[in-house]
Image 1 (tube, rainbow, N blue to C red):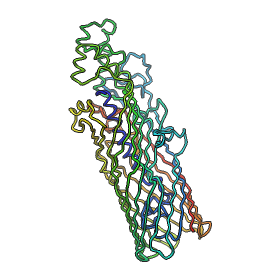
Image 2 (cartoon, helix red, strand yellow):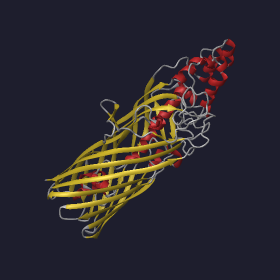
Image 3 (cartoon, one colour):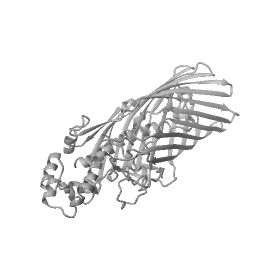
Image 4 (cartoon, rainbow, N blue to C red):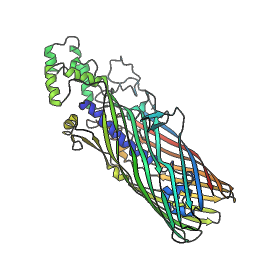
Length: 554
């Protein structure tokens, strides 16, 4: 492995950490409970059935006897992405980027004469990571992601203690696109999952007004990324300039003198330009046991008013997995050309370059990741006997994602070279500063008892972004978002309820050229990572959710 190969690897790990954190914010509380979605997740003071295990375990004391909740949540991701070249667009004097330029490859001009205008690169299908297969699986164009959950709770007759357990997915999301999609340079396929497969819980009713509760969650965490890489950077533009302009007179008439003077670079069959593909990367990591705990309190002094509070702990994880790199022809030819000349070999030795780049490199990688702690508190109040309003505020400690640290299973020689460029690299580790911010949010829900059998609900939750303005990107098209929910509960009999919920999360964003250091920043220092340097980017995200809950009691 060499520096040209390391750069794509570093970028892949950056995207890995970025997708983890951004997806966590995107998917928070979207696939846990349907009733909560319809109330804007403002349910801390009115926890929903067995899902109180997650939202406020103290609410389990409201269950009598044995109760089982079965849920099916269907999510459809509609992600629209657009790119366009602003006036004066160029990278080191080149603007013939095939992403936004219609010119033929045979056009001798390095400046584009026919820009495409707005280029669409929408997400085409959902993707999931399958633990048994250890790979991502595409679900097909237009197919939704399905997240089934099941939970059971039991309070013995006359007891003040309620016991519960639930299987649910705090986070499940993923998408992909076919070859040629404009978005493939920041994730052709992405999948992230957090599934809580065991959550033993207990709640204690101190008196008629006050309850406390706790739950322990054991979760599986997985992350997979498959992406193409490129580097529209001035330094890479120099390599194209040397190949097309400096080396042009010697391509047919090269000799030992030109080889010595030009380090053999003119012997490269393919150039490495700012718009060429550097590599194709595949990274997958997982952890089978990731423990957390939830602590809750519920105070209901009257029938009209209630207050709830929950603390959800952090979880420090060490994701482990594999990576593989398929370098582009330009990078391989450049190293081969350098080693075809005596002076090039000397330069390669100084830079630590090998004599040969194989068609594929693979190895083991691990990443320290902390699932952030979360605090939420709220009230419920009956404005009228049949109309209740819920209001919650919450805080998530995304500031813990100020940086991500990846470690290799051995000392890597190329890291010894790269560490000269930054303090964030050691012989066997790489630290990536991403600068996320802790975020406050609030939600409101209305609940109306239309009849003894029918209950109607509506909710709204605006979600402030944890991603700084200078880190926005089209891979996770999420800035400030809004969640809208509608739902109803129909009681068939005193022991059986059916919940129906529809919800939508939406977010629009505009990233003008040169405003994000993780998307479209230009300059010499934009190597890691700005695949759309100098381009304007717009995104439009809509997540449509639909689900049904069957609740029965004995």
